[in-house]
Image (cartoon, rainbow, N blue to C red; front, side, top):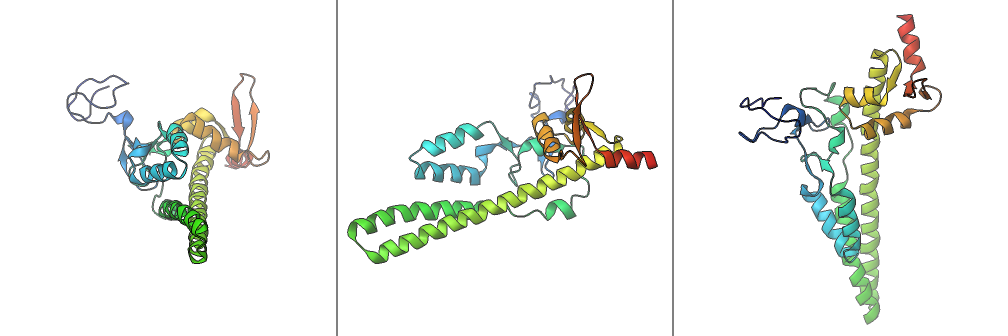
Length: 239
């Protein structure tokens, strides 16, 4: 493999060209949500994630922050919208009709979640102080602030769940299109290679779609896990 910028020979493990610093074609991906092209960034290089880490650490005396950092330290995300980089498409592959379905995705609710955590962090010491001083006004204000913070965090969490569901729906539609093209049968490797997903992400999508009716799975004689789409196979036979 050679660098597309300067022509220097690269090994498959090289993340950048050592001569000019350009990304090799295999490292470039395109985010299906915002259109960013690149190699993604470390999870905690996003300001929002870093703020959330600090807030969780302050609220849990460092323990929650340590757990959060350990679980996410190796993840990579899109620097613009925060989408997990396992869902990114190959750089040369354009998302199908990116305008209507993907741009209409709900907000991730990150600001609401961060504001909710910060409000709760302020409310807890105020409640403790108000209780110690027997100040009913301070106690009432702290309770209201805390309840508002919890509500804000839950509101942001709901937005994140809705966004993930919308993204999952978009990926499932692409899987159905692929199943129609492939005659109604797919493997995890087929989906991972065609949609440029990790094997784990492709497997989770297919297993989530498996309802035993419209999508069903079985083990072939060769020991392969095959997902069948009967309606797609029926359409192929009609054509």
